[in-house]
Length: 75
Image 1 (cartoon, helix red, strand yellow):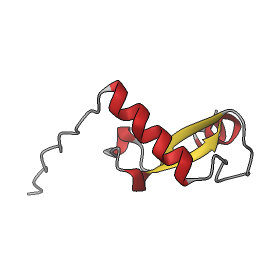
Image 2 (tube, helix red, strand yellow; image 1 turned 120 degrees about the vertical axis):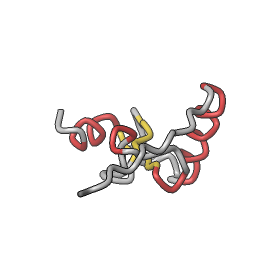
Image 3 (cartoon, helix red, strand yellow; image 1 turned 90 degrees about the horizontal axis):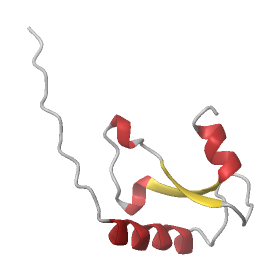
Image 4 (tube, helix red, strand yellow; image 1 turned 90 degrees about the vertical axis):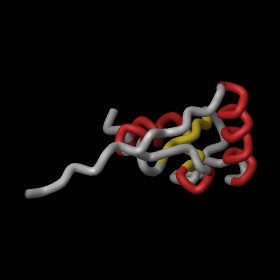
């Protein structure tokens, strides 16, 4: 019989903490989309999605423009 592992509880950052983390990622990535190099309409993307138990450490986040971000999500 296969055992089901309990879900990990994710720590949710406060809005202020997430905003600081977002700026850290943008600075780290040189304020450029890491997919196409654009410098406008930047967003922060979770490499491992939160819906797939991804979390918010800086290593799981990447700067992308809104066009690349939409493409990553299949929109």
